[in-house]
Length: 137
Image (cartoon, rainbow, N blue to C red):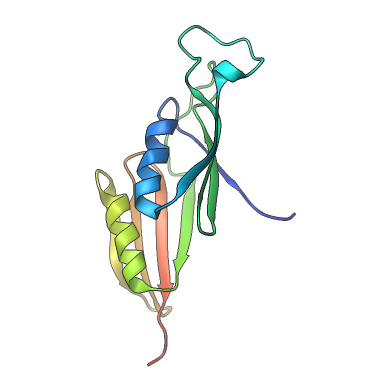
């Protein structure tokens, strides 16, 4: 395997979520395909929904979709994404951005394993674990 790519299904809120993540991570939507441009037989009103999108911010990369018209998705605790940082200030900036309208599970704090670590569930139900290894003095 070359890489692991995370694929989110936001059940009709993909475009909104992607713009939110643009602001959190200073990233960009690199590819966005709508159902209206596909050969699929889709129900009326689903044409502008996102069939596939790709997001990139530095080394952070994920894909997303509104899902198929007949697919029901639920936010849950089955996915956690772990982000590693080199700088504590960057960790705090991203943590604060993700926390807006979300739920703080664990405020960033020093851990027994020598890292600054925090956990947040963002407004779209995605759980993020943020970590920055402490550098020796």
